[in-house]
Length: 524
Ligand SMILES: [Zn+2]
Image (cartoon, rainbow, N blue to C red; front, side):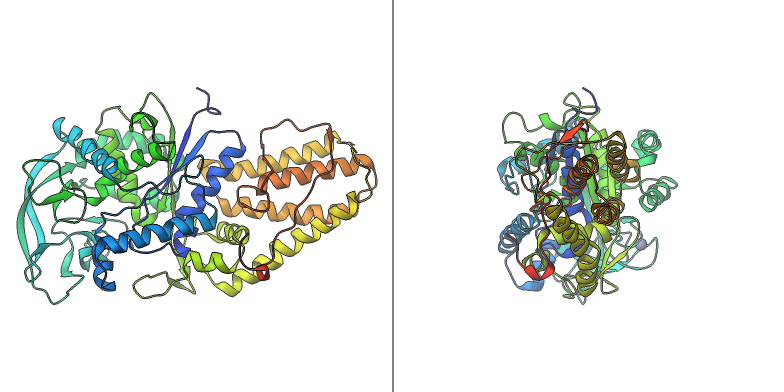
């Protein structure tokens, strides 16, 4: 299997079904992963982009409580909204766009089988330890159910992992714990016996893995991984006392569920199988012998889960499954200088923006300004201004100029290209490909490269004074459309981009489509 034919599985972190996706989510993993998937398809790679909703998260419990909704009602409503937002942004789930996989019995069986195989192989340990317990509510608290102070950076934090510094704080590690749903509920530390996964056992394999993949980790997540490896690696809960989630399949853990973050890998295996058509064995697409290239997209706050815990869960299966090639990690996208926040209502829903602005412009702008290496900011009027002045206006001036340049050509015209023209087209393709290499993946730089070519070609149209020059221009326009196609869904529809094709010595006039304007409103 060569790199060119190796199947690729691209997974943005499973979205929690406690609300719709906001613009910060889109600019983070969800659009980036789709644009990257479209790029790889344009180079001929077989790609499946998939994910499913993360219904078991404790955040479903807290959001349902805040909204006064039954949990399953919130999950169903959110799943439907997330599915619609996916469609609205033009992100294709699966090869024939099968939509979001259902969280059904096959899903739950996949989760239970995944952990049972590990338990039976002696990969988990049973531990009696202390967890915060809300005495009035009569429940153990974990993840979003508990808030307090991060023991690593002393910022306010929920349980599980600190959103700010990324460090884990399981069991009794969170300082000054309070019940999120009732901060006045007296908390005591109560003993409980659960299964844990001791990460320390995997230190050697983890160290070797990170050394091998050092080039594809962005600096900030790499720093966190180094921080975590510099101390003893934590035990991770495999089961927790609770009722919302997938039941623990172990006979000696009554009243416990599988810890929600343990579900991500079996959830992703299930989603891949489902998105590929739901035939054959669920595991097949992820088996080492199938050898897919696995690439995750997620936020910094998920590094500990998707970058460490999930890696260990795959390693613990001792070679059964392939390991990921890369975790593409984004930082936070701010709204008007502050973090997006669903609970405070400080947000722009993806669906609202996509109902108001043509999605190709949304996709391009979020890629151009997304928080790839550090926090960046979204502001609606800035978006309108930049999209119009830097993208739509020059692009559409180019489209008009091209239309004039080819208007008088007779049907069946074929134009010659020159070595210089082919050289320029080749160079642009190589520039764009550099931006998409996992070692320095930057959709923002790829978008900038496209903008630079739009400006250059718009100026070049007026210099066309021969059939050869017109042929070269057509070749460069075709190249530009292929390079821009991962960002666009509608504008380049019907164009099959091939970034690896031989550059032709003769070319027919190219149809160069105009972009919709911000004012043109809703999507087709
Ligand atoms: Zn922290």
